Image 1 (cartoon, one colour):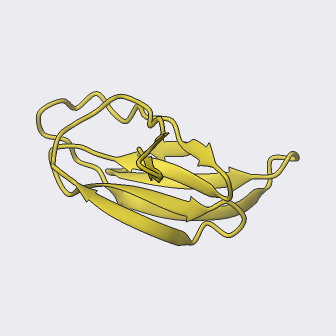
Image 2: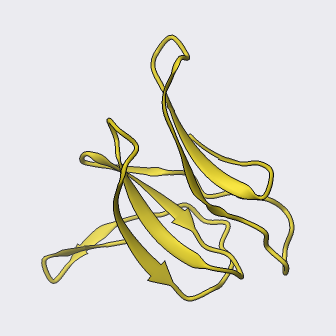
Image 3: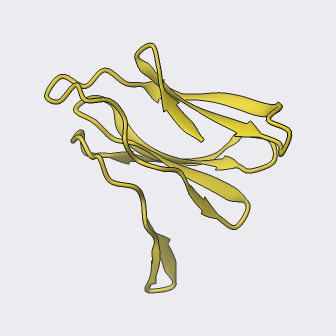
Length: 97
């Protein structure tokens, strides 16, 4: 799951008993244009959790390893706020989020 708390977004993986498996800070999150909070849900794809960190600041999409929470990749994005969850599709043999 992802949370917006204390001006940051963090991802937390829990086991079925509710015990924290891993916790990872994703990004600072201090939107200036719309201060409603953080809305996108994480996207599970194969062995990764893809998280959108897009707002009117340092924006990007990142993927974390599902088992360890370690960053697998990060793609910078144009600074803009979004309240939408990620979706994915194949285009020209590549995955696009």
